[in-house]
Structures are given as C-alpha cells and as structure tokens.
Image (cartoon, rainbow, N blue to C red):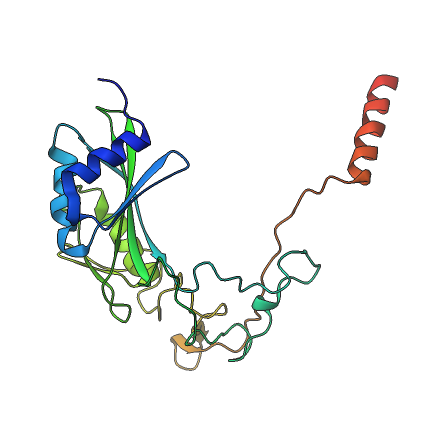
Length: 246
C-alpha cells in the first residue's frame, strides 16, 4: 500500500471524523488533529482499528502548558549576556517567582493544558499527532488512553506528575519522577524556578523535613550560540595553515 502524504492523511481524517475533531493542521510534513475530550477515546479507537489508519503504536504522550504561548517573556532575548536572562533573576513576586494572573490569551489556544499523543502506523508508514485540551484549567481532566494503547500508562503518569493533568480511568495514576511529598507540578509555566519547598535532614527531629525555599538562588543558563564572524574565519584559516605545515 502506498504511503499517504501528510496532506492526504489530513483529508482522510476530515472526511472520516468531521465534527468529532476541532482542527486539522499540516505543518512541516506533520499532520496534527485536535480532538475534544468527549470524542478522544472514540476517535483514537478508530485510528487504531480502522484499515485506512491502523495506528498500532503510541510512540509518545506528553503534557503541554500553553500559558503565555507566543509571548516573549525573556527580556533581552535577542542578545546573549554573560549573566543570563532577566526572567531567571527578577520577578514582581520575588526572585524566581512571577505573576502570571494577567497573561493574555492566545487566539488559537484558549485552554491552558493539553495532552499530545504521537502515533505510528506501520501498515501505512505514516505518523500522526493527536492533541486534546482539558476543558478546565484549574483541574485539567482528560480520559486515559491506556485501554487503547497500554504504552500510555507511564507516559500519562509522567504528564500527571509534571503538569498535573488527571487521566480519568487510569489504572494507577501516581507520581513517577518527583518525590512522594513533592509540592506542585514542576513543568507548569507558573511553577517557581526555585521550587516551592526544599528538603534537608534534621538531626534533632531524626528525619527529613520539608521547608520553604531559602537557600536556592535562581539561575538560568544561556545556550551557547555559534556566531559566524571574523574570529572564527581567522581561526579556521590558521588551523588549515597549521595542518598544511605539518
């Protein structure tokens, strides 16, 4: 069977699911569909079972926080500095803490939390991204996909741990990366850069205790950027001359 292009797959999905999907997008040779939570299990079951799709493998599932999506929160981000970006140093609510309460909404992503699934069809040699937004931001809840692809089990636990997305019907929804007593969900955009609490061993109490953060200093590193200027050109030429001489 011939491999469909991303655009052909998008047309098949529109024809098959119609109003059960909110949006179909093709970008960078990748097809993405947005599915309301009410239809997520139904649509995903069809994507796995129906002959024109046969997405037998769930290769990845992750959470996404769209808070401040498209907004440049990094002042001075156009030029690198030796001390890092301002967001990692100062904030109205104190070092490493920022006020997100008045953030503007993105016209496309009006909801905050989404679960994103990457699927692979061996039979048709094609991939698909399925995105579903939780209807509530305060308590994001989505149906589990473990009944369709058992591989979703640990991925959904990871998204629950890091983003606080609750997967209704999951057989064992527990934290998987952070400590049992961890406070909050560290991949949320409004999670403080310095965290909420720190732990230490208290010799007087004879146990590990949790305390408000006092000793952690916010630190954001700056990614290295290769800049093509005269220094690198000269260095390459000198290196080439040395190689010839040897």
